[in-house]
Length: 219
Ligand code: URA
Image (cartoon, rainbow, N blue to C red; front, top):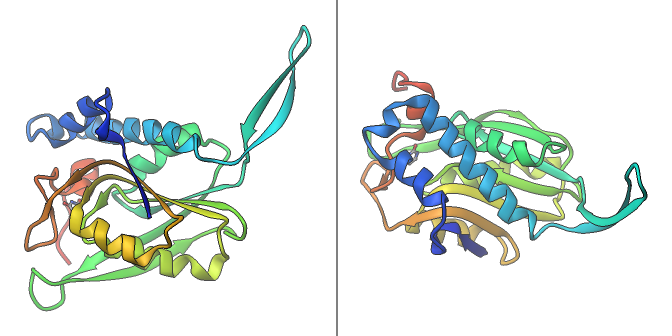
């Protein structure tokens, strides 16, 4: 897997990341959602440099302008519900993309420290020969990303695969690296070292779904 860690070069992205993490600023859920969306926009721009481009000629009022435009073959897939703001940010730039949504959640069956990923709702166009961008803002254990990809397999074989995350934990990145081929790209805004015993990223930012959309009752 090819890892592109966007915070290796300091940029405005650090400001958005600091606001996402800050326990006082992150209480503003509209700012929280918008900061994830802004990171999705930056990620979309960076990711776009690796896409397939083809020649086009654009007719202006005064003549023709030759350029290259990326192939419009993107399917953007996100995991509900925390993935929605990152999805929106990517979609702001890849506005011609087709979209797929999948629900994956952690089911704590026996004790709060162990869980399995349950995939339920799935709406997806054909992926055959297309560019799949799979977005999951918090790459914690990596199990949601891998379970989602398994669930997408009946929809066809993508030409190329890009994984997009805001924060990844190193153990989750190691897990995902083993599950995906070496030509798959991981675009990540930053990487933290640890997971706690509940599978949360440390220092991370907390529960991205709750911060974006409010608390939920535990299942
Ligand atoms: N999901 C979250 O929202 N936060 C984490 O730290 C891990 C998974």
